[in-house]
Image (cartoon, rainbow, N blue to C red; front, side, top):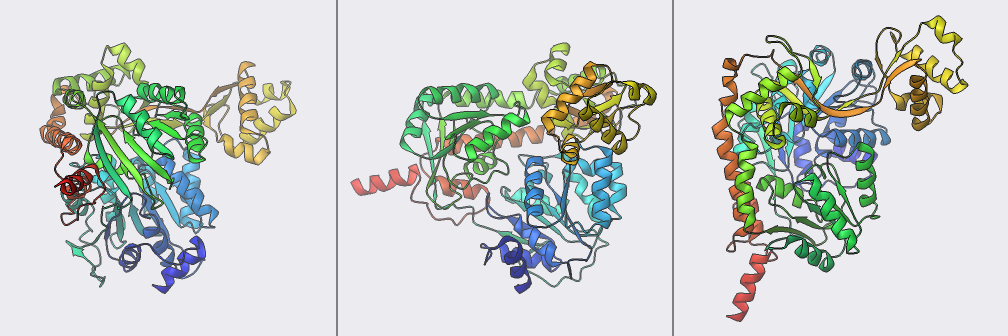
Length: 594
């Protein structure tokens, strides 16, 4: 343990580990497959970062930990943080150029890189799989591990590809981490990530051994987080009352993008500083609003569930759900963003009788009938002009609103149908695929030298021609941040110069964009071959219905401690009443009156 503490103090300047961290680190450090169930904000990252560094005999040794996570913003934040600590790290995710990807993998193979963060979609890339076997991998960390379970609330098919990495590195231990997993999902994680039969079984660390895994469970109880549900016919008025009663930073969760703006404007009109956040805003807007809230320039952020992953603001005093969430898992994770500093915080869920009707409609929207799902599959193929028997391995931009308008399809049900098809393995779908800017030079080299260019334009073009090959014949993806850093010209000025060059007909410039992307995993199939979509459809629909019923029952029941009810859902059956939630307080008041 002393070696682990030395690393903790050297890089993170902490004197001791949090509860369970030391046991988890010793387990994975001994070579045992390890599953850690830690609450949101429980310090999961250190559980793989510290032992990965401890596996290296010295600073010059080769050794790489691959970290699989679906949260691109979080992986970027963690890579930046590790680099600030002097730990060489990179991230691979959709939207990077082939050259960038190749350079990063070269660093991982030859450059003593310690951590490579990878989005699960990258696991489906043939180029990545070919390079993977040459990397000096010593550990694999799977964050948000519940995403591997088809029966969980956030199943992501690319997570199933993780088993192929285990086949490539059968002796390398895996650590899986999650904050929200029911007992059934825990068993599914262990099964889907089980060690290859080729793997060594020399590890002697037993821990809490379960089917070959050391499993560590932190209590899901949060003594400083007060859970409250409240029936409110006029939820907006109740929200104003709550915000006036509980001071400090707050998050308000709603389900629709439009509602984020409407509620935020209502709060602002009542003198409560507020902004809104959803996935439809461009990255700059999201970053600015998030940072203003983090810096306490804005008190309240009204958001969809796109907000919060990877956000570690310790002093959130209030999390309000204005709409019933899809599941206990989602609610527990979002509510858990309150009170991470250990001080009292409130998690409030508002409901009324109309919510029951809304929940039933949500189920039909999330699980449209199978003929409609197949119709969407056909419509996407037709709109993208993909012939039967073609498409596998190719990615296509799918402007969602335009597609639905052209094909006369309802937005919500179509989005659900695309997700169902993705879960069936026919394609993968990214709502926000990031495409880097592209440039092609439209004239010959001889013509280019005759053009009257400004000195800055010449510098930019000369740099791009040196760094990116083939620009006279095809588009090249460019990294404007890299150009900016190399030439000492601001990103804004580079963008302005490229636009000016395009206006003058010297280049064709396609700026950075974020748009939905479909990647066909199989060639386009005839309708009669789509039976796989039906596999598990009814069971998943039943589980979804059960999850919605569970969260509605949590909201409306008045007999059981709310914290007890929440943690029992995750298999923690021996928790004592919290004494603070609305049910516990009402019961105590009744006892005092009696």
